[in-house]
Amino acid sequence: MSRAYNFCAGPATLPEQVLLQARDEMLDWRGTGMSVMEMSHRSDEFVEIAETAEQDVRDLAGISDDYAVLFMQGGASSQFATVPLNLLGNSASADYVNTGIWSEKAIAEARRYGDVNVVASSAGCGFTTVPDQTGWKTRADAAYLHYTPNETIGGLEFDFVPDSGKVPLVADMSSSMLSCPVDVSKFGLIYAGAQKNIGPSGLVVVIVRKDLLGKAHVKIPTMMNYQVMADNASMFNTPATYSWYLTGLVFKWLKDQGGVSAIGELNARKAKKLYHFIDTNPLYSNPIDPRFRSRMNVPFILADEALNSAFLKGADERQLLNLKGHRSVGGMRASIYNAMPEAGVDALIFYMAEFAKERG
Ligand SMILES: *Cc1c(COP(=O)(O)O)cnc(C)c1O
Image 1 (cartoon, rainbow, N blue to C red):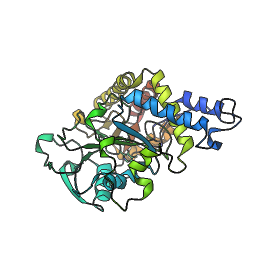
Image 2 (image 1 turned 180 degrees about the vertical axis):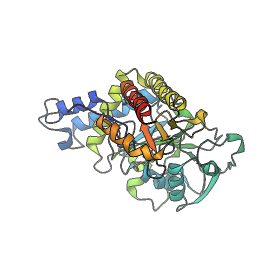
Image 3 (image 1 turned 90 degrees about the vertical axis):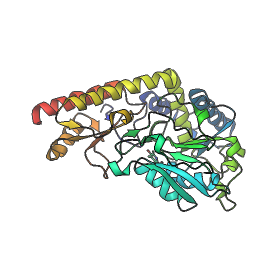
């Protein structure tokens, strides 16, 4: 059985080279006679793996020494609480932009810890666009401004970095991390669950400006305290070692691809092709404002919903997997992260055209 093209939103496809290397190193990592999974996280070997991964992501994203890079657990969802518990400080209020389901989840969780001000929302139009920043009701005394650069479920992506003035900007980059160049210096904090663009689940990478450390709520669980994590090189307890290792392999792979600018160009080309096909074939459509269409997650619907199951069955037969849309949205969704080769997008378009010809 050959490898399928897996369009799952997450856990998502990983680069084949990474999996092959992990296979080769599975039983015996570089002559140690052990799998990485079996190593002490305090061993020289694992510390080297961990430090190399950190250095590689620093190189890839251009992260300066002003920032700590943390490899935490609990996925991006745990950060919905971890961020306010660390950053609210005494101001007890934070600004949030609502552009979809992941924004809403972040907002709901933050409301448990402080006063959340939703400065702008595109809920009224079904999250098909990003509200223009000129109308945002931001507060100069907010502890931070949170937004979701790419809404994985809705397929909506910011094409700009919001200007938050002196207020630290916080971004949930779970589904867009390292998919194109980003100026990290504009952010106070970036977090990303690994299982979309950078590795397997179980890990969340947090990039936090060091001056934001040390303001945590007194009753914050120790495991959530960024300062504690930074002081202990993310090894206050046993980290998700194997996920960390695999994520490090993905970073190396990304460097081999030419880094984020090269992969960014490829991602733009893949998305452009797929949207162009959707826009020009009458069977398919995408509801998102073209300016803000996600390069990573491409939702589309069939003009006749009765064809959905036949479409998915035919796709499965061609090893084009996990195209079913999120249960809250319906229709289809093709997630085309960094590790989805252009040939996968070509195969999908080929199948969509064939299906439209036969059934459309
Ligand atoms: C997947 C996702 C999450 C949730 O990630 P978990 O690791 O499952 O908690 C949060 N935000 C965004 C934007 C996502 O795509």
